[in-house]
Image 1 (cartoon, rainbow, N blue to C red):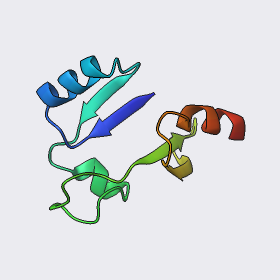
Image 2: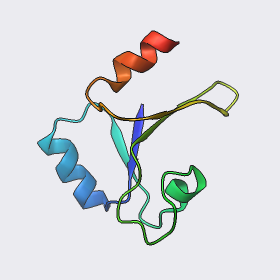
Image 3: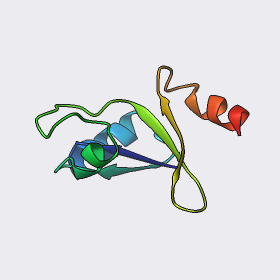
Image 4: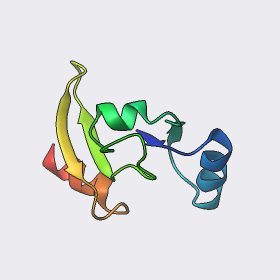
Length: 81
C-alpha cells in the first residue's frame, strides 16, 4: 500500500510520524499524479480528493473508491475482493 499527497517530503514525514502511518507516503508536489488519476480538478487544487485506487496485476485500475472512512477503508476494500 502507498499513499500520495501534495505535501513535501518533510510534511509527509511529520504526518506519518504523528499518526503512526503503516505505509509509505509519496510526494506529488507538482500534482501530476493527482491530475492524471482525477484526484484533483486542476493544478491549483490545495488538496487531492480522498480516493482509494486498487491497481490490478496488469497495472490497470481495478477499483476507484471515494474514501469516506479512511480508518475503515482497507477493511472495506479487502471485503470487496
